[in-house]
Amino acid sequence: MASKSTSRLLPVPAFLLLALLLLSF
Image (cartoon, rainbow, N blue to C red; front, top):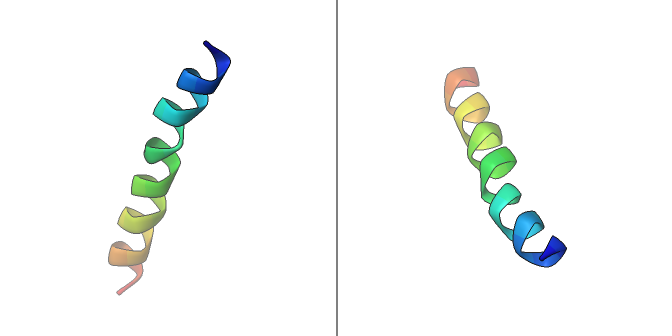
């Protein structure tokens, strides 16, 4: 169960980082 939770949370921060990079540009 914990593994699934982490897998679902992983794409969230990654997308946020990408958005920040795009905003930086």
